[in-house]
Length: 439
Ligand SMILES: [Zn+2]
Image (cartoon, rainbow, N blue to C red):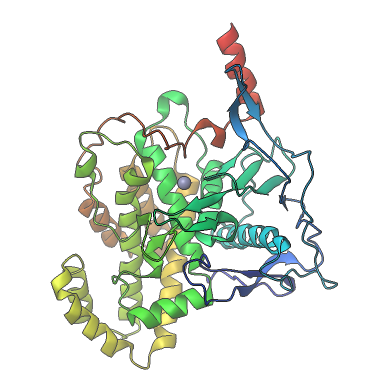
């Protein structure tokens, strides 16, 4: 059941598992994506997508406004000049590119997107087409450094740049977490889809962000170096703050979101503003489930005793017991790294499969977090005879999902445009909306 990240006969790319700004010493890692060597042309480009580095492209794609204030829909393809594309070597690979060259950026972008697609196509058991595949033959992946955001939309994914609070500038095209997050949004548009306007809930928006983050977390666990480093640093005690639960981070000290959080639904009883914050209880419930399933894998292999597991569970949110829990893990981990790794990869793949199957079954209309949990349990019954249902139920209950209702959406913060209509607006819908406004 292991997802195969390295495909024999595939195409080689070099990818940064973590934004280089976070870890300047680390070299990019060679991965082999599923596309047979020789099938990816200059760009890179294949039958599903192409990456470009356009010259003077502005504004970003999506819903834009003319100078007279009237809106228009700006969509690919880019018809202006582009900087030189990345060429494959004579055997069809892209791993020869110098990481300081502009060609490396577009190859990195393409390689990361395909790497994430491979992982999730495997969990779904089928190729997940882009949500805009009916209207656009290929997805355009754009490196747009002047843009202070990254966004997937109809026919495009654009990657800008980030400036951290401490003033550190970094390109999203070399930030694996951000790229995987955007592909995650795309997977949800393709599988869960969009709700009808009257069926759209706040929880749908929070779910979208949560799912995108979970795609990024599970995907980064497909880099050998990430898994090794994670286990070495924590000695198997994953509740310790670590690489895994820092997502889309911009510098060593500024975490945008933390999956290993303690946010519960009570925080939103009077309302919510930002879907990223609203996503935390759901991401937390599923992240905790991943850790608990990992513990079950360790128990099954007799790598930890039931007493250790019990203590770790009981004190997971109590910092002053962490030293004792760490000591027990360190003892259990000594000399057992390969077995711990196998247990973690199994837990990763169980959760990856469960998420894929849950999203396949989840309706977009009137979506609630409780329903996500119910379907996860249903999937667990179908795939594993309910082995992990109690874990799932406990983690959803801890987050008060289904018990504390979500308050109304309060005024949006001005910069919050992650879920705006540019993400899903299609030419057909635009024409329809415009006609409705005119009539
Ligand atoms: Zn997002």
